[in-house]
Image 1 (tube, rainbow, N blue to C red):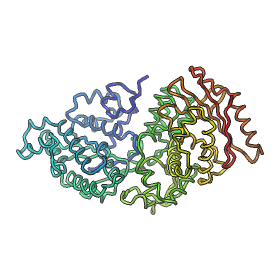
Image 2 (cartoon, rainbow, N blue to C red):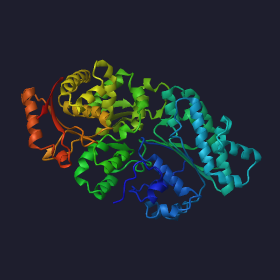
Image 3 (cartoon, helix red, strand yellow):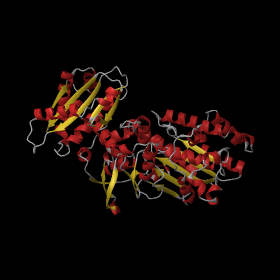
Image 4 (cartoon, one colour):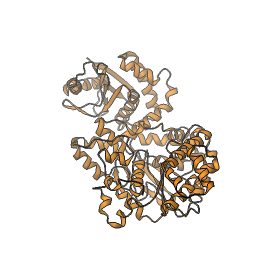
Length: 555
């Protein structure tokens, strides 16, 4: 079985290392077929945007020496000469802005100069060709990171002109993560300066630029065209609501089935689906989060991989002030739908005060999925949380909202009490936290156990540096609720079981505890840990009745 190339977003490296690859080369065909000269594709982060852009670069690039080898055996090579004739045909400019989001405007400009310096260095062979003295001077200034702002604004257009002259062919322009600098600029407080720069930069790049064959941009959100793309002609945006390109990002149900078969994990399919499935792009449903799937194939542990890959700063900013939004998130956390207006043309300025933009941003960034179109004319949709992994993220965000409301219940101290076996303090603080949390959220009896489980799991993510946090995995004769497995085998490990009070059964909370203790013993949940050499195993049962929580350590 081929290895998993976690974190490898360079198509050539992935193919030369013979890593496991989900064939997305039909994306190349879809790009060629599309008639727009400027294509903007928005998808959630870690959904394969950069890998796909890298794939386009290696396919089209006339300077690539081994393109045929890289694409051998892939779907695009079966599409006929109309498409294979484009292999290695065009000069390509590949620009990524993923590292251009910095703390202030001056640092952003310095970083952009560095990015352009590296890009020009890649094409320094152009200095051997014909260019005017002025162009040569500017080329060398950019190459030494000494460009002024005007040179920087004109840098892509000048490079496309020089490539066009050198190869006598139009240029393919690829810009990855175009929106990172703008989103970060808003969070850091210099958005006005940044948007003014990029409006001029993109206007110069696209407007009246006869040297470009086609431009492809990718990002997480669709920034309003009037903000930065007012100079672009024949500009077409494809969001997660559009059918075009719907199978080119993320992992489809069919692709997931093949992965599950290839890695012989058919028995884990339902749990994988619960955690990482649930996305819809255009008319394609059942799309899985690729970053989480690939990490799961590597670790074989059900964990919130995707939600821990960024700071989620903009999402936290837009959610923290609106009482109405908080109330709707309560509903989402009960695994229910909400009906909301969706505006995908994100106006970043003041986004936290505009619900249309808030829900649109959350949909584009992968935190929600559409379940029903209510009124397309006025952009009203029903949405819900796509999967368990995202549910955990919302739990973490909600927990931050109430962190200051529970004196003494700092998350770090609660987790420290747990891992050091100080159960008296752990139980006291944990009860206070849950009481405050459940009081505000007003969780219904029919959904309380799932809510409680997700909340605890989200809390335990704080131990990710020293523990593997596993949920609903088989061990012994059943499935435990949560297992904390220390990365140091000499550390304390934990098995946790949750039970919910039911009015129908008329059990006392003490009787619920006894039922949970009996289940943990009869099912032998510690078997998996013992078989792998763990000896310091603590079993804890939790029972809850409304806002009342009781826990007991099983001897």
